[in-house]
Length: 160
Image 1: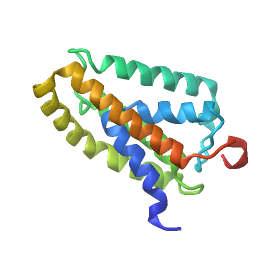
Image 2: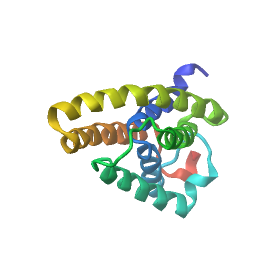
Image 3: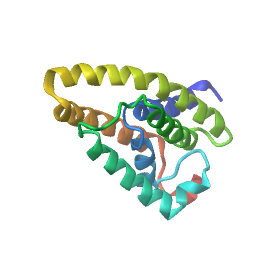
Image 4: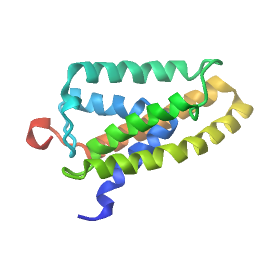
């Protein structure tokens, strides 16, 4: 097995760099739609996880536009990215390589959080907080959905 097998984990880590809850929300939506992940994580099938992750993802998209929203690089923001990227990265890694997938996702999410924050601040200075947030939301959610759609498979009972 090559290291390219961990590309989905890196991609979902990139998503987590900008929106900490989007990886979990997209995984939860995929599981609700009956799609499986290569990596095996029991918590992905728990209803509390699925609906909680969707609610947190939606809440983050709404809260990000508030003037009081903290930067993504504050301690709790990075901690949320580590948790979300780790779980989603493990889920998208090949079976038996879940720990490596989590590590790759986290190693992608944390440094990119600083880069995506710098980009967002530049965009905010040009088009404002709400508009820059909406553009970032669209890009990040699309990247998350595309990653999950491409790297998950139908009927979770078959392989997931």
